[in-house]
Image 1 (cartoon, rainbow, N blue to C red):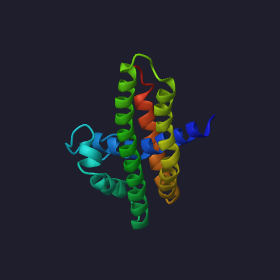
Image 2 (tube, helix red, strand yellow):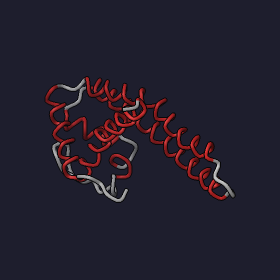
Image 3 (cartoon, one colour):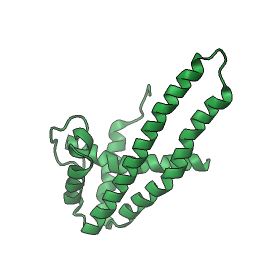
Image 4 (cartoon, rainbow, N blue to C red):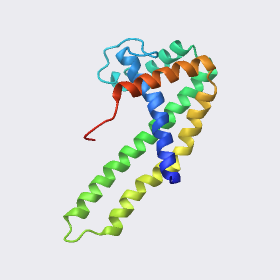
Length: 165
């Protein structure tokens, strides 16, 4: 498996663990669930504002220490940065690809560069995201890791394979 694929999978897995805990919290399901707060599909963004409510609830559920909360904040910040950057890049790629498609002949080199530029962003940013996620998860006690693992298993089982995406 290519390094870029491994990095992308690791980032997605880390984001699923932390980001999905917020969704479970808002839906009130699973080991990490704490009830729906009425904040829309994802509670605005992790409970209505960028991570605040989610982090508070996660801290309560897992009984996080101040140091663990700081590490969780850092991991969430890194994931938000990556998400913002990939969204921006996706918009640019879409616009540039549409321009390429309007030309009489598709410039294959430019099209390939558009696609590979997205991979480069993941390769550049993923190590920081993974380090931040690892700092948080490595600081968890075995019981806290068990709770996160239970939630993760439940989340993956409830969603099953996604089709049509």
